[in-house]
Length: 447
Image (cartoon, rainbow, N blue to C red; front, side, top):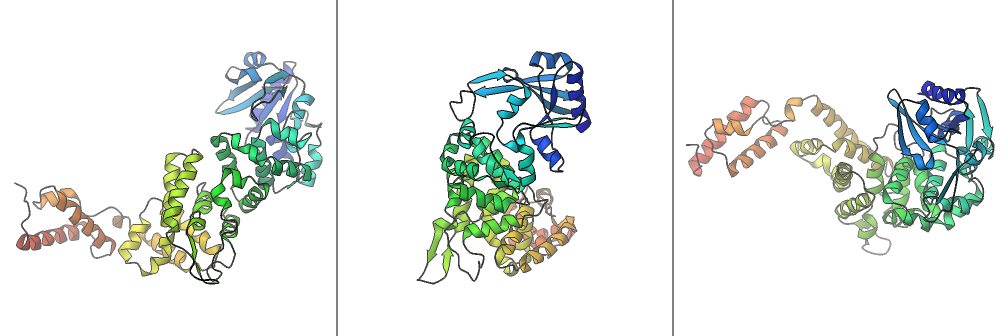
């Protein structure tokens, strides 16, 4: 990818245009991180870019933005420009082509306003970004309120960059974010969702939630979680403190390879607690009756509001709905535990349960029990699909009807309880069941 990005810059320069890398790829390169993509800025106009490269896509020609396709990769190539007349906190009313220095001045934060020529290996810094990278400090380019007002999503981006990079936020920038937090309400939910998804990733997701709350943005984008800040819990079960402190601790413990939905299962698993909290007597235990049911309904509303994909919503809602079942696992029948482990979301649920324990009392006994049984179940693939099928019942002379469901469900229950171990045993059990029922209760037979 890097070689292809260098080739694009070299071709533009050979054609007489100024060109280089900009934005996150330069920032990440200077921080010693592997850039995820490379953006190119150039003096070449869109029509010149089209003429130089055989495969281009004019995604934003009016803004000077083209996509250049090199092999299987796509690179954004944008003409140097300035912007102005922001009226809706999102889009510029005026765009004019400019030079490299002016283009860097229009960007959001100093660490994103660096220009690098990979051909001659030279860095151009007109905004003080290199010094802020060394100081690990996030600062707007120019006056904070003015820069944040141009695109209100920058309020969230400030928190996200500070979290991802583990940077401090310059006091003037931080004060502007806090004073303008309410403006985020004018941003489309899809854009907010994408910033939040990038915010809540390890290893600094816990700090991200704290900064989101301290900035005032949590109350605007996830008000249901703002209610957890002062929601107390009984210290014998939650020595870490409030529900919010519990969530922060769980996010801090996210593994680096956490699946993308695990942070959302963490954030929402106790979202119903503030609405269900009851203390029987002063100083007594705090109870949250059916908070998992209430929380599942709230989680669905939140994720739908943020325009999450339907499948993702169902998976997170299942984790919220079932997370309290885990405490009862040692007392469950083996078949009940196995049914739980056969849920398609069980892997995500188990990962949530582990963090739930580590973020509170620290006892992983139930997690270890279920993890061991799950591994054993995975090594017994014959247990997972039902051994008795409808065609087996038809072969035994039973006509399709309501009895099918009853017999198949009970056979699978016995299978999961290890009372039935092979398809032959399943068919023998069904034949015996039918014989007993024939003697005591007439059954509609196959003609």
